[in-house]
Image (cartoon, rainbow, N blue to C red; front, side, top):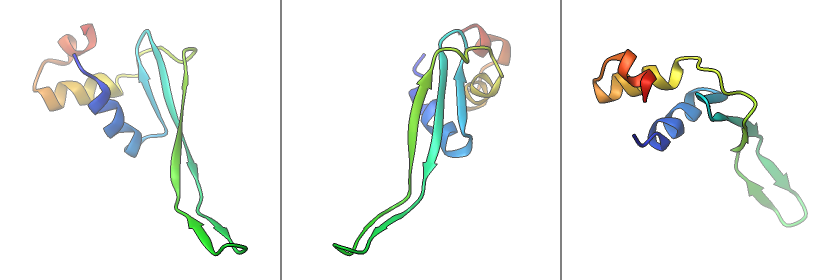
Length: 79
C-alpha cells in the first residue's frame, strides 16, 4: 500500500496526519515574507515536521484510503 498520495492530500486539508503505529506528519503554515531591501517576496508555504510520538489511529488516513481505493474500512485499518 502506497500512502504518500493520501498523506500529501490530507496535509492540504489538516494540520496533522497520523500514520498508525508509525508517527505523524505535522504542517505549520508560514506566512508571506516581504524583504523591502531587495524588494523580494517569499510566498506562503507549509513546513512539514514528523514525530514518532503521535502514532495512535485517529481513523482519518484509513477512512481516506478506504474511500479512495473503494475498500472496506476494516481492511484499510489492517493495512
